[in-house]
Structure formats: C-alpha cells, structure tokens
Image 1 (cartoon, rainbow, N blue to C red):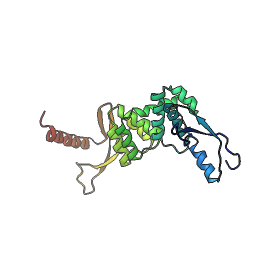
Image 2: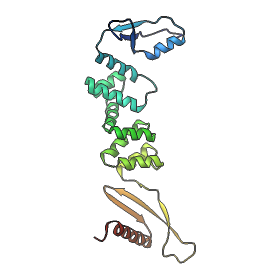
Image 3: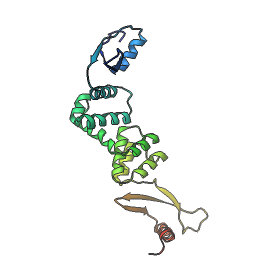
Image 4: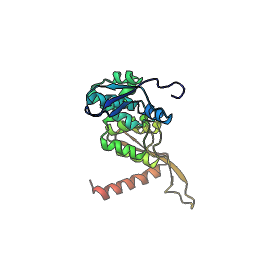
Length: 228
C-alpha cells in the first residue's frame, strides 16, 4: 500500500441509522495497514444493505485471509452454502477454486461438531487428512482413526488412506519368540496383523506361533464372553 496506494476502497456500513459510526464489512487488513502508514483518510464505499447482505460480505472478506485455518474455511463456506444458497461451482468461481475442491472441503462439514472439535484438539490441520477423517466417520471407525493419529501410528495422508482401505497393516510387523524353541535365546519369528472388511488376519510363517496365538485368543474370548 505504501508503494501503490489503496487499490480497492474499504467497504463500510452504518452501525445504526441514527449515528455517524461505521462498521468495516470488507477491508479490515487494508484499514490496519493504512493506520500503520499514519494515513488520516482512506477511500470508503458505504453500503446500504440489510444485515444478511452485510454478513455475507463479511464472510467473503474473511475467506480472503491468507492464514485461514481449514476449520475457519469450512465454517465460512458452509455458512455461504446453507444461508445464501451458493452451489459448489459458484463458490469455486467466487474464490478461484475448482468444483472438486469445494465439494471435498464442504464434505468435511458432514463431521459432527464433536468430531470436528476432536480433530482440531488432536492437531489435525490439513484438509486432506480431514477428508480421510470423514471417510473413517462414515465407516464407523472415527475413534480408532483419531486414536492412531494421536499416538503417532497414523501421521500422513497416505497412512490415513491405508487405514480407510483396510488393506495395509494396522499394526507394524511384530517379532515374537518361538514358543517351541528349546534354546535360551529363543528363535524370533515375524508376524503381522491386518484388518479388512470386518476380518482380522494374523499372518506368520511359523505354524507353532500361530497355534499359540489361537490358544490365547480362545482363552481371552472365553474369559470375556464365556463358552459358546
């Protein structure tokens, strides 16, 4: 602004029809930049609009901030869509985003308020990770998704996609002692646990180890649910 001046006027509206006080609708950052430059006057455009239109313009201005978080963006876009009946394509045109971007972003708003708050408190900031949280919520595995993120087992979008596909290991490969080994330094064998479409699969090349795992599972099932 110091070099080029005020390229666009600040948009204001009267706070009350009876007084001369105005409220900034669009251009808050330009106003503060002008104050830092010690400007005594700035060009303004006075709107004579109802509250709903003022609110709409304020949302649009807020969405043009560079440091907007995904949660702020989702909330504002959802307001524009539900309160002012914008389509995904119209919102995309308004903010220079693709229709698919808008559809994905607004899809995040399908998370409940509690789920969104949990994601925010857990530190999930990326839009793409939030999209994967939506997928987990729809499959009924949101709590498990969030727990894996908080423990560090799920860190990236790739991890999240693998979790939602239920095709990759949910647990890192483990090393177990061979129960039939007679040596003091028991032979170590590798096993892995995967989950897919309601099926939990334990894989190992050691038949004896698989037999021991099966016994443990049966024992725990009887303890918890009794004999079937």
